[in-house]
Image 1 (tube, one colour):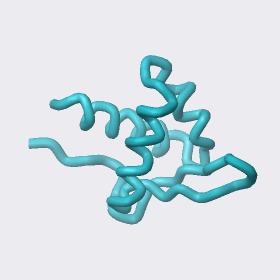
Image 2 (cartoon, rainbow, N blue to C red):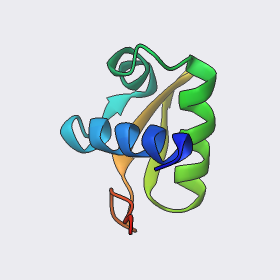
Image 3 (tube, rainbow, N blue to C red):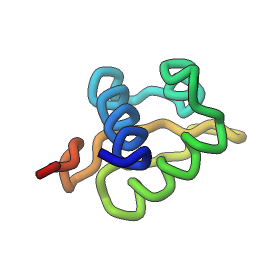
Image 4 (tube, rainbow, N blue to C red):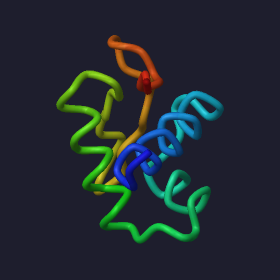
Length: 75
């Protein structure tokens, strides 16, 4: 499993356990990842439809599982 898949799976798992969480909460749940790493992966996952990223206010974003399902499938 490559690093990007591992990061994606961790983010998706966190969001599935804490739907409606702030992006900062995901960053805190993954302390070994930088804010930039989480943001880049959240951006990619939201573009794929696997996460829904919604603005909540000035610089705050809420994450929800996307319509394409929360977890990736690995062979």
